[in-house]
Length: 205
Image (cartoon, rainbow, N blue to C red; front, side, top):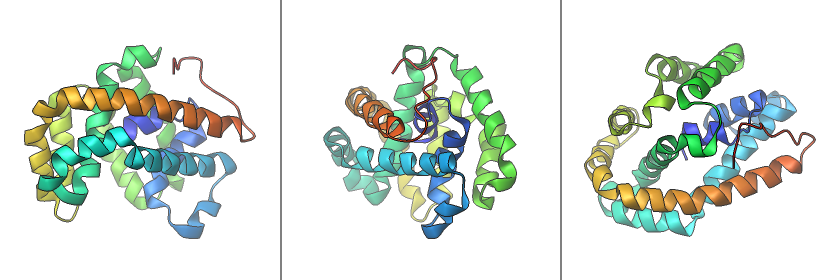
């Protein structure tokens, strides 16, 4: 899952949202530099990534592109699945996607001084080009994959993911249905096991 799904699965908790956002940039003992809720968001992000990568439905989708894309297939699938969520957003959340996206940017901005430098740069471009809202459109997914292709080693292989994307849309939606339901259950269980059991009422799943 990419940013949109991670932010949804923060379930309205601002600090968990921050943790979900910065998780990939926080290494080792750095996790202890953050508040309990931000740290919990980091752990949630890692739980989501582990579940997604090991899910049988994702493995099946990955097999359809891995021969051409290799290890970067996981990055492509994360973006694909955010598209599936964005296209059905009103089914999952009571706040329109555009409004939800702007709220996320605003909340992250409040914590900007405490974000790793790499994530401050990411936030700048995320806001400027409204990544979250644009996941709904195929053009937004293409733009996202093209941008990633210039930022990761061997990223030119992600251009193949752009070509394959239209043909894979039915499989992407089928995979999303299987994976996202499992993720919502796991994250809610995780949250209920911490000091905070807050779940935003705007969430339908």
